[in-house]
Image 1 (cartoon, helix red, strand yellow):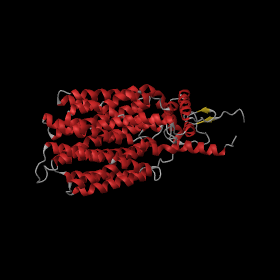
Image 2: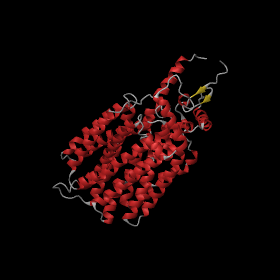
Image 3: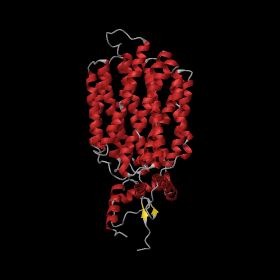
Image 4: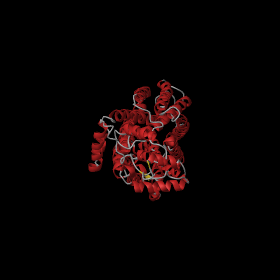
Length: 499
């Protein structure tokens, strides 16, 4: 009996060290990554109208300034997902942060419209890796704390939106949109200053067979958290072989998957794994979920600024002065940005108590309810209140979706799967300005709202079709093996006598 070596898995190690100061530091870095992304997205609400006035742009040209950012994010989400799964989370952080901060700062010096469009597209490409921050943070959290802390990290996004709305209110009247672009790039630069302190994901290292390096990080984690690791040696699920007494279709598929990962390590192999028999349903449903979430969330954000600037054009009232229009824009965007805080609070309360699927369903239906009265003409105060409620529940749904996506995939394709889903969501972001800007500018607000309602209805239907709930489940490490292998491990552990 004594000759048997004690071993423990990564999930057991994370449970032993708990959530402490080490994860708090990881939370701050990952959260600041989301803070920076929120700033660069929210800036679209202010730069578009200002540049349109400065360079006498058409509505379609103004819409393009937003669409190219999402186009860049579409490409970036897939690219950074592959980079993260192939070369590590840290290397992805470095590359995408350099591109985001550099292009964001240079866009402040754009001499013309074309150069601004190009540089904002590059900013979008860098921002496309925002999901990598979430996947990285997720892989440091014990299963019992996952839902709560993945919602809490989203607070950084909300703080970023509020910060940008406040910054715009201060900077735009005194200076101009160029200063706003330059100052908004500063948070991305700050991520580079602390890059050397960022640890690699131990789950990623275990997947690559670098258990010694993973163990070193776990030791630091235990030291900082003042906890002890379980006795024995760290092993990963990749090392544990499925018992030959349980032959199944999973065994042969797993060997093929391992061979692809170890030999090819190409973007195509990781991408096509998302369409394996075990993952294709999840993948397609997740694409619809992210498309609908992104379309509706950014639609509400852009609707707020567009309604503020054109509501009098579509009515019989006298036109407001430029200063009053600007004040209305900043006020409405700032007020609705604060709506995200109660949305996040609601997510914290229900995400683990009710589960991911019920939480998203409830909140998206409530967003649908708040948008519905906008089909008819409402007063300015009521319109702002309805947009406040719609954004609150839309943000809550978006937050839970960002938690749900990486939990659905195994470690070997987690960042790629979440990245591709995020990329599909960016298509919704590209299409959205054509609705929020073009339709609203041409006084077709009713049609725009109906379209948002239809998208929400389709998305809720897809949420209900997801095959399983991830609340309380351990993260899987290998394709097609999570359910069968974890069941075998649980069975073996229960039948093994205590020492």
